[in-house]
Length: 231
Image (cartoon, helix red, strand yellow):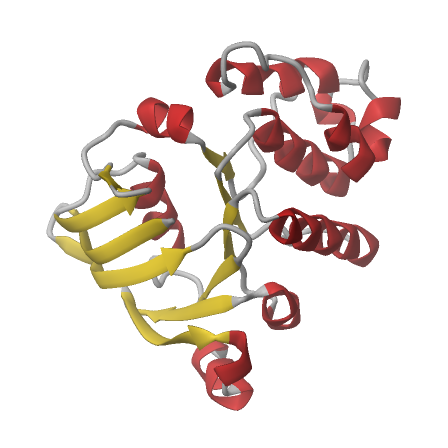
């Protein structure tokens, strides 16, 4: 289980995260919601070790990883699907997938067949360059690349952004299937309320660097959450 406790983060004099606490458990989706600029991506960067924090702790399976660099966290099983996808445009789909081998466990540096079961379109496009794919196909590739790492913690930053509705449904199904398998904890940052609500086992709504509403899905006051998300 991932535990974030009283996390603070500064960019210079700007106080970006203010005492964030949350948990992500295997077999569950923790969904983080909030308007643009409230600190959601900064929180993910802190969890992944991409941004140093000012105070607080990040714990993974009883190990304090707060000061571990990103590559060490990757070897512990942290995998990211970043906002904007960050596909290597000049590399083929197969080559993009192989970039996930760097953090994959020894003896498992191959693309598992279940990745193509989740995203069959990628198997048909292995020789195509990443930059030639549609936005939805690139998003599927970004998720598949993360899965090549055999993650224990999967972090997704707004996977529905700029994606056509049919692909959004496919991505939602994949996230639900991964959670149901019970082998990883999933953190999902999302602004599309219905998508987030339907997937979340737990949720946290951020405002100005703080969690202002949180709980389990069955306790969610949808009207209150929607008001917080409205500009």
